[in-house]
Length: 100
Image 1: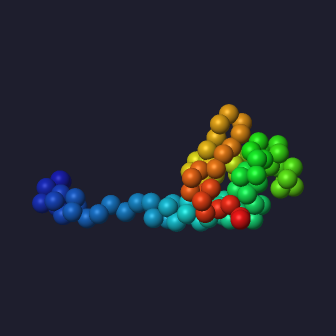
Image 2: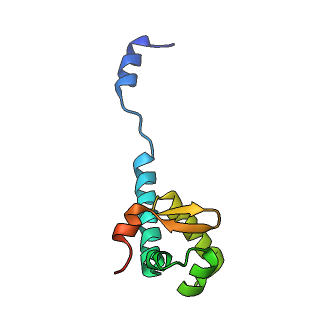
Image 3: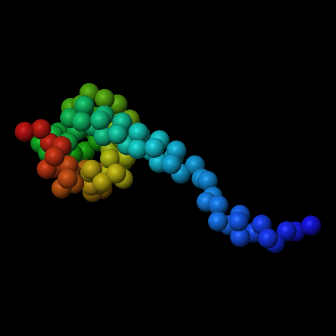
């Protein structure tokens, strides 16, 4: 039998979702992506004119295939801008992530 008196109580209880776990995991992944780019000095290489995945992979001495995935992630995160097959720095990256 349906008890209508319990409906308001059930709707007042917040629904649990795994969103905080997913957001924390994604935040960790984002920091790993950014730290990898900094370690490879990608932002400085792009500022110096190496803006294609081929050139960047050569200068950073890494796999071009893996670097393409890293560049795509950095682009989605807003640190790079993609123009065809080339990448340029976002204003934020240009200001804070290029070695002087």
